[in-house]
Length: 191
Image 1 (cartoon, helix red, strand yellow):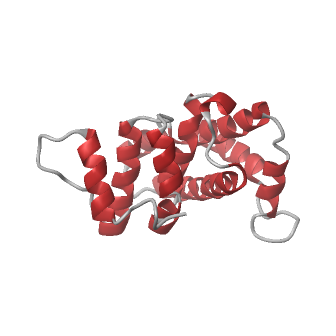
Image 2 (cartoon, helix red, strand yellow):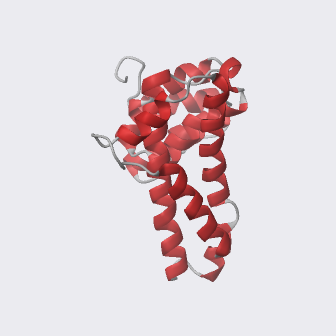
């Protein structure tokens, strides 16, 4: 629990959103405008990823053993949801300001940060909003089929309350095409 407290403190220090400025994204926009070099962008994306993964790493499984009806587990899930929403806002604004990160600017590993964060923190409409950008990044090889399928499956779950099932055998490419069709996603109906 001590680790959880330290992580939450780090999150609050990193995400001090809506403090000062006008508009609900003023603090985030200020952070993003300060990213003048690729090194600063790499650092920004790395912080988001590290906080996201450290928060999840092992603690959810530990708390599940104690029971999902415990106060500790419910507090963890509430805090995870808040973190995911905050990270979503940051990535949403990052994409609006800079576009999807490119491997030669930030590294291939960090090009998956936006899809990871969007999959964790966005509702169906928010995830749909970024489909075209993420699809183009996927087509350029910025992340794997597995990551893109996971994102589409999360969208399916958000829209229909369950994950999409296909009759085997099928390839990941076929699964991607099928999920796009079922979800009504195309490159022309999204930003």
